[in-house]
Length: 119
Image (tube, rainbow, N blue to C red; front, side, top):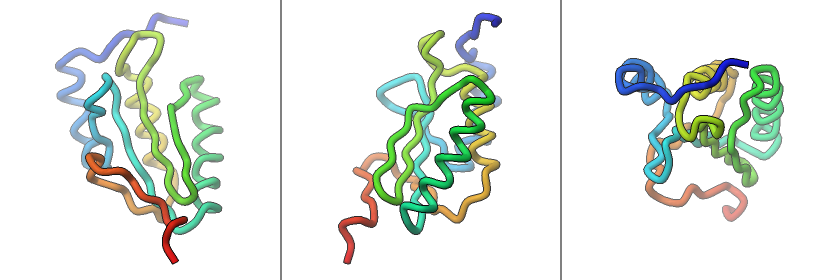
């Protein structure tokens, strides 16, 4: 397997704006991108994660993710190079291509609430 390199500044300027349009945001604490999906229920969230897991395994590039009830919170960074690489861009695009009826959280500055506390 070829060594994976960090994205250059030119690559970031070309590749990241289209991902930002789909809801990916820079992670202020890491050289990573993050996206949060809010589904109608746990079953939809789990179905999305199952499809995402199959894609990730096929790509041999796996997300850092968290699931709480109807929320799927994904952060992408390449551990082997210590930051963002083309693998993260490719996986983000693949996740964006998955069909979903989720609402995409645009503001990551506040805690993301799931539906489990709502009556």
